[in-house]
Length: 284
Length: 258
Image 1 (cartoon, rainbow over the protein chains, first blue to last red):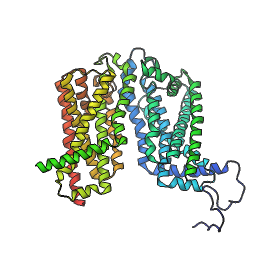
Image 2 (cartoon, one colour):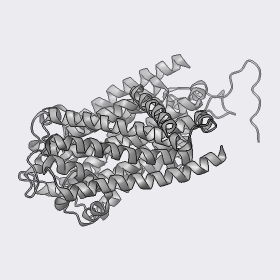
Image 3 (cartoon, each protein chain N blue to C red):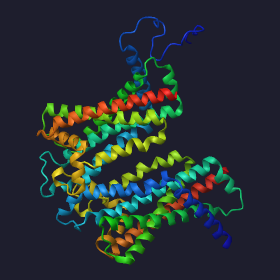
């Protein structure tokens, strides 16, 4: 079954557009959604079929969880450390935030790789509304994160993690994680659109890695001393970790601040990503 | 014999320059372990308050991990450089010259060993600046240089084996996370006696990286601890021997294809 040839002088049907009804008026933003849906479907299909893509994104968080929750559990007995849900839950929140942000980053890698292979350039030519490209990859990031977070949560619960917060708190925790996926993706996509090469990978992940580790990862903020305390006090990742730990423990701490920080970062990196998209358009 | 040494020396020099001239290879070797050291030493300082923790200075405890991370970067850089030579055809052209086959890899590994000693010196210097105290003194500096060099050669040889086996730089890069797991599941952050989670304690006990780390660590914390030192050297030497055997096998196959 081959597509009907395009008459001379007419533009070929755009990606995601139904070929027969191309002349029909599109609903507002319909083009964006169609492109997004097509990209999301293609990327998720690739993701499922290629273990070399999804296995690392699952292994890293599990190793972090095993190493930190298992290897550092003695830190739960440090004088001044108090977290009733236990050290596994304390570390689980870090792993959750890290997995969420890295799901966004890994999707940025995919976008950069698609540029390097020439696929994304063809996509830029074919898409009827290019903002749909960004939206489609964002949907991929959220779906990938859902898979990773489900596995990590399952392993943590199987390892005996206790959750002392209620259902609403747990929902809040995962909602915060979803926002962090978009933060990570916004940053990485902005870099990918600008550099259009996988060589920019370290530029995507190093700042995120540093921001995460310059927060109270191993012990609460109160037990950090010196320069790390000063840095962690103004680091937005501290708000994410404290809010997440508050939600899993049922004792709210900086929850509103964390959601506000995440929303502000999404707005900021949204602009960064869209200006990157413009830069990629100019280069195409 | 003299000719062999000339060949080894030339290839060693090339291997060193190839790494030193590429900032993308040099940056992770020098800065990544130091950044992790800075972050972990500050974030885990509270661990020194645990009963049974062997020192009051977490940086003296944690600096040992930097030497192992440096070794793992040797694996990646050496393997990637060799794979690049294979992909570009340079390795095949070398193999067709009268160059002794043993010099092909020996030259590379001598360069890696020299770089290993160099990077160990950098870590020691940065540790000193950050406040790490080397209990073993000047003699300890020499032992660390030797152990750091041997560790780099062991990991570098593993990188060579992977490159010869696969002929792909991407495949060698893919090994990095795998080896990083060995560091995470070891006594890198706490002494084995303080690893309270049963399964983690068992894994750390059978993980050779724990003993390699403890070899470096003993020189910083205890001074001259014979048991930790011989175990550290045994792991580094064992790793080198196993990796060289793997290199010999992979080299045989690769040259047959040539």
